[in-house]
Amino acid sequence: MKKAGQLWKIFFSTLYLSAFTFGGGYVIITLLKQKFVDDLHWIDEEEMLDLVAIAQSSPGPIAVNGAVAVGYKLAGLPGILTAVAGAILPPFVILTLISLFYTAFRDNSVIQALLRGMRAGVCAVILSVVCDMTFGMMKARDWVLIPMMLTAFAANYFFHVSAVWIILTAALLGVLRTVLRAKRGGASA
Image (tube, rainbow, N blue to C red):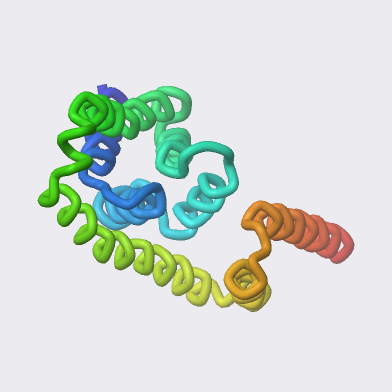
């Protein structure tokens, strides 16, 4: 019974977040963190950063990938199905309705003004994600990851290196670092 209650909470949390999130997947990631780390305390902040990294590097929409990662962490396969259902239901319904009334929305100046105004809020939420992730890495005091983060930013922003290459390189460096740490740990034992 307790697991069923948790699944309902996962479903309604992801449903609510998905229904009232404007601006794409990065915004919902912040809200998933706020809900599952800060409010419910089901996941700690470091685990959430790991889940965000997995969601970002997986193919597909980041909101769904984030829901998959959180759902799996919390309740395994039933958690995945529940979180994904909650995450995709609102956009499915909203896009269905918008497609039915597209011409009315396209030419409506009030709707256009509303969408333009929401851009500022979306930028603020995305900036919040960046700050949270940066401060989380700085709290960990991992002096390898901080320069790696700055290098990845510079490569993408200034040199226009594809995010795919940055993610693959970061993953490769992470695996290499883990293997080297394991060898050092095994050699000293």
